[in-house]
Length: 370
Image 1 (cartoon, one colour):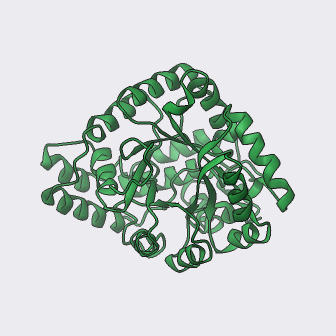
Image 2: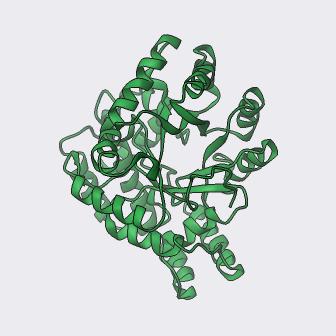
């Protein structure tokens, strides 16, 4: 584990994008139990952003974590996200609103969020990186980094332009490791080249590596060891330049499972590595939609189409070849937009960190289910 930050404990963090929910609101009692269990197990890293749960992630952290635990007992990461600023003058007020929402006076890490070739131009034009350094000089940020979704070439350019960056958050899991689109391994190699420790997001690919096809599941079952999540998270955590693996846990069952194998972390054995490689090959052969259910695409959708839920139905149809997925589709689109309601405005594709051709995929889903 590469950890050059003394106050960060262990190599496992609480990603606060998929929190326990009670209808449209965060289930604060369940979240409090999860936070206390996490801290009691010796972990202290929490990750949020304004766009997570339409801002409810930040305020839930204030109510359930910040108001109940000493500030020095936890590490808090927040992010500067594209839709929330248009010019340089917008950045400081937005940042101050994040401090207020979280109830803190500083962030331990502050990341330029979801950087890619397109929005990097905007961040540069608005001097976002320079503003982050000013806020660091003022003591309102301890460490500045980026989260990233693009090619290794683009990442290399950003890290060359900004050697002051201290960490990089990457999508990194065994399914995406050699994927030509996500380029997890290639991006990881760029981070090593520049000497930047890696924070892992999506180690279970938005839950896609939990529910596996039977052929793949049989391989893990034959190990007679851990859960599907354990193999995925331990795969990511086993690389030398990984300082932190985030898990977006949404209930105590997931929390307890994750803690069981990360509290006293051991990398995958050779036998487990071989099993993971075989599972990855089976996973890729299915040619499923690589949606991680981050829901960035739904925020600006004028037709309120539940895009990730529709894609889950498509993947279920591909994976299990059952009729249940059609019934699920009817249920999730009953009070929202259907796939065929898409007006092809393209807002979703601009927001998608996976660079999915969402408009075409919705046409395919409409043909499949309507």
